[in-house]
Length: 138
Image 1 (tube, rainbow, N blue to C red):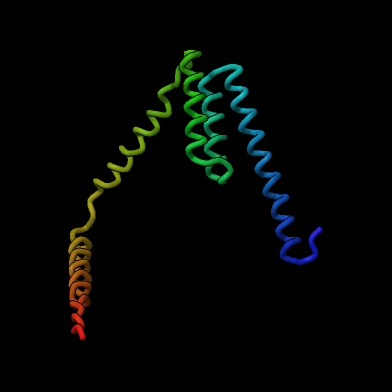
Image 2: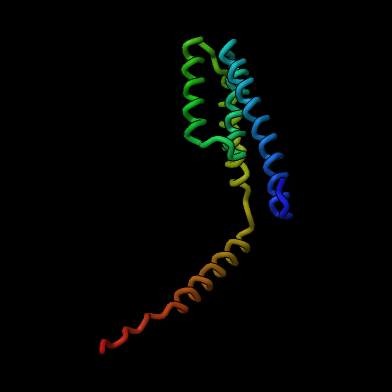
């Protein structure tokens, strides 16, 4: 057991991190094994989600997870798993909402004020830059 205060804290942090990492790895193995045993779209989604969580937490590297996902996709194709288009519809619906929000008319006064403000700052930035004088060689 460490004596130094910072070393004691490090030991406690290490224990907490290890518990979290072991739990995430267990979840990954459970989800992947469940998918391999019975390939379904929902099982694939769960396994993929667990792998993405591991990348986000810094437990696995991005390329490792990409490789594992490709292995799962091969298993899914071999088993003939059909992925639903609901995810594709959700993704397609989001840009339409954003496009509708962009088409909302804004007052012309705000645009004019914004343009003049941009021009003033651009002029100040250009004026602030001065050429550096070359030093004479001795």
